[in-house]
Amino acid sequence: MSADGWANFRAWCDHPEADAIIARWEATGTLTAALNWYRANVGAEAWADAPLGFPPVQAPTMGVWSSGDFALTERQMSGSGAFVSGPWRYERIEGPGHWLQLEAPDEVSRLLLDFLPV
Image 1 (cartoon, rainbow, N blue to C red):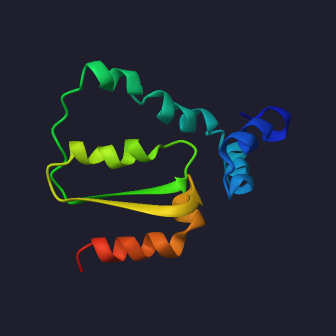
Image 2 (image 1 turned 135 degrees about the vertical axis):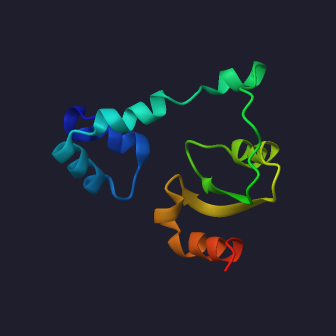
């Protein structure tokens, strides 16, 4: 990720705040910790044949997906409702990428304000 002036990170993520993230990782040495979060996740293949048996989410839940997301498919997000026994709401936003809250903050805020109880 950090080789060649972070070229791999920049090419892979297309993050709008890449410079700030790189500076923070360099200052704190936390790249490994950031990557370990992903390493600890259960791979999709584990879910297909042997569900892990977690109880369904009972709290009201909203899933938001953007059509430009390079890491999460719409089917993954919309299918998350199968793991929710409480109220489920799915929203699709056209255009932004994986960093939805940074690329479309007004739209995300509007959805959250509409979803969360006052």
